[in-house]
Amino acid sequence: MDKESQNCLEHFAALKFKYQATQYEDSLPASLLYLILRKLDLGIELLDLESTWLGESQLEETLEAIKQEQKHKVQEFRNLEFEFSKLKSKYKATNYNVSWQSTRLYFILLKLESGTLLTDLEVQWLRRTGLYETNQIAQEVKRFTQLKSQYKASQYQDSYPDSFLYQILKKLEVTERLSDSEYNWLLNNQLLETAEVFQQQESEKEAQFAKLKDKYQANLHSDLLLSSPLYPILQNIDAKNDLSDSEINWLEQEKLSETIAIAQELEQTREFAALKLKYKATEYQDSSPKSHLYKILKRLELSNQLGEQDINFLKKRKLTEIIEIANEKYVSILKSKIDSEELLNESEIEWLKNNRHEDIIIFAKQKHFAALKSKYDVLRYQDKSHTSLLYTILQKLELKERLEATDVAWLQETKVEVPLATYSYDRWQQEPQHQGTKLFSGKIWIAYHTIEANFYEQEFQRTDNKWNLANASSHWRKADEPEQALQLTNNLQLDKIKENKLKSALLTTRGGAFRDFGKLDEAENCARQAIKHLQKSHHPYTLMGAICFERHQYSDGEYWFQEAIKRGANPRDMDSEIKRVVKNANDENKRQQVINYLLNKDSQRYAWAKSYIKKPKNKI
Image: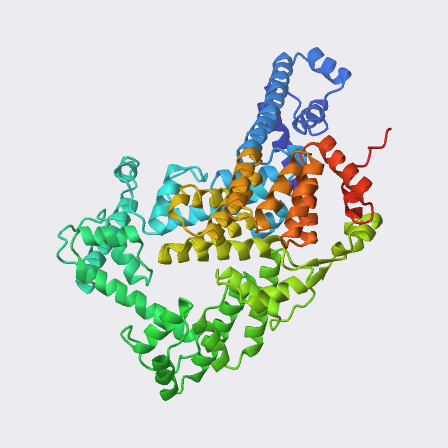
């Protein structure tokens, strides 16, 4: 019999045994039963006539075995599918929806589950398929497997990264101390060699701790336990790390002053090296923090300029680059100060002059001038030069210095152009004074009179000359501080003042302050007393005229103004008082009454009053 026939006979016999058909006598390869059993073994479903033939051939046991085999295959199919689903979930591959029968993923996941490392091709396949989380887990499995081998724990079966052992091995890798529970876990899981590795690490650390204590003069601290706060502190020092405040405080509490001194010296040495590199002084050999160069560089870091002694020190040692860097840095600091609108002091200006930086001085003055013009609301003044007289005047006001008579005269004569858009054309025509506003107004006016008021108050305190009191009160009123004027004249003892002119002046300025507050009765009382003391002075008459206009007693007001003019008052001052009444009127109807009276009296002289007429609102 040839080899092929012999194989067929053996195969047929094996199939009959498998499907419980050994009683069937025909064993020839051409047998119909052999065909049926071969089809079954290949998983091919039987035809009806084949099943019928088996029944007719009294092969019921074979039919039952076939049914059981088919059930087993169905169940096994389901088992494989369920296992694949569980593995996908465990290894973060649930988004991969290809059937387990046609993908290599099942095989890869089983390799991971068994702790077998993936090949490079399998890793690349995971990446190409977009299974990044699965690949990440695979890398962790790989690392876990390597750590188990390295730390003699390969007998531990679980290779999934959430294993408690994995966390322990990662600690061992960085020589981090294990807790008691972690160490006991190794013993309980018979990982004795791994536990021994830990003990060996601890012994090495204890030896290192002892050396560090000796090296950094910390032997006064008797605690040798690795849990001592001293151990990480000494490790920090040895690793050339700066100590934190809390670490230094702990060393101080333990009275380890020598350790602190060593640590600080090392820190300063490192800082010195960094500063030498920054300031291009690496060729300087001395690296000790006690070096004078270290002190110089430290001061530079604090934005301090070089002193003459420091400059000489650097020049002698040919460290001129440091001087250049320091000068550039100081110039930058001064520019920043200027940009933030801070004033340069005298020493800074002197330094700039000595170092030929006049352009920065000019820039600083121009910036300061612009800031002062903004503060005093005179930005419309076109001259931006730091040589402008206005800049000198504003500096004096800022320093609360009195202005010279020539300064005041210049302010009175100098006007600032006002754009036409600021006013209506009619008002522009009616008020030619608005075509150029005098500098001596607004905030400059207020600042000037405030300084003058304070000056005369101080003079009064120094000399007890009550003319200074009158002058101070007058300036406080002009500075829009009538309350200050009243306070100065609250306790006038007129019976002790011999000079009638002084009495009149004090009463007039006090009456003016009352008028500023709208207390017209008190103002009138002061004005009449002032006239009684000195009838030839025009000032109290002017005050009476203004009071009458405030009360809308226009004819009475005209009378008092005429009396003031007879006594030397300037008619323009009368018009200024009338304009003030119009401007400050709170009641619109009363303002209109004044305006109507003035325009009826002299429409050309009082043309300016038209600008205060309230225009009716447009009706929608």
